[in-house]
Amino acid sequence: MSYFLYENKGTTAFSYGFASIINAALVLDGKSSLSVGGQVGVGIAVTFIWAIQNALRIDLQGWINNVAAFFQISSAISIAIVLLVMAPRRATAEDVFTLTYNGTGFSFGYVCCIGILSTVFSFSGYEGI
Image 1 (tube, rainbow, N blue to C red):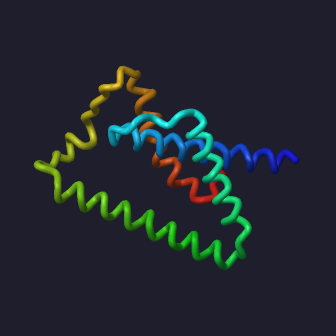
Image 2: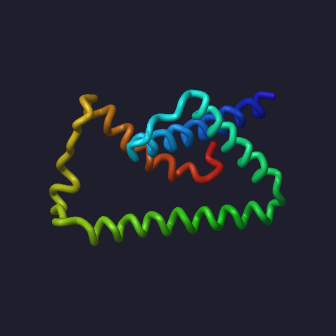
């Protein structure tokens, strides 16, 4: 029973995170924020899609995992290329590794830990919960 609750907790957290990202993207695009009900609806839809995906045969799940890995690698490469091409000037190595900019008002330690989260998430993999 505890394993079942543990898996549901992780899936729910990822669904909520995805709904929050969708909401943030809408706000950044100048549109109005999703209501709480809208965010819950997005989370439920994502959870339902994951449930359908988990019901597929293992060979189909392998193909989905391969496609997801391809998109993750290709998006990282394309972001790096766009940053290199579109940057008006490139920072020196000293600037990259020693300077920080924190315009949030939070402490440096907190911002540093939040910034490291994206790296930690990539270590967890697709089923890292």
